[in-house]
Image 1 (tube, rainbow, N blue to C red):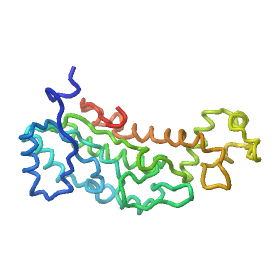
Image 2: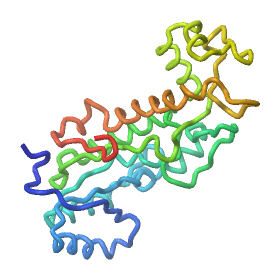
Image 3: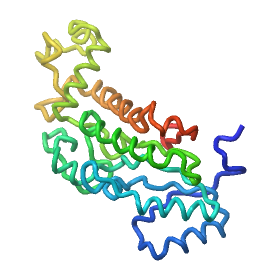
Image 4: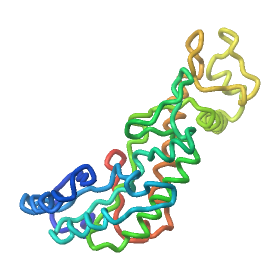
Length: 251
């Protein structure tokens, strides 16, 4: 059974045409075909180009890229483009950016800068993935969906209030009672005994090793799972297009 409708071995890699003048795209794709490339992953880091302002989409350049690939017999592994939130989203909602253990909110300026627990980030990724799916689900170049991944890569942990709420909910689901948590953590040592889950915070900078540290990394990692399921969202044309999903780091 073939994974995609593309016959034979899938051969190719990431292609980021938005980083190059459009005048070279035709030569790029011609060389791909000449080299026997059968698939190219596109639009991984293209959120700010595809949605330059909230709710305003510019798909023209991606239309031309996909058409060009199809004309040369190269299939597309189309990304959800959610790897890096655009600057307009960060300026409108700075709370989507992660906070470090010292309480400093990180600035915009590199890929994958976001808090995975942020409901605003998740809401906007769903909107973008849905818009991309609606436009390209039936495009002849499309062979596979490249689902957003690497959620715990550049931002392994976030210490913001939203992440703290997620952490407390995760702890309550894991231990059931604060008494069970105290027993498991040995909180009687150094007077760290808790009487309610609402008293627990992430292991921010403290006078000594916080008792929350052993659990926090696992709890933080669990925040990434809903992000993965958000893009592409089930029930959209993305899911109904009968193209397989691909997440390089999770499949």
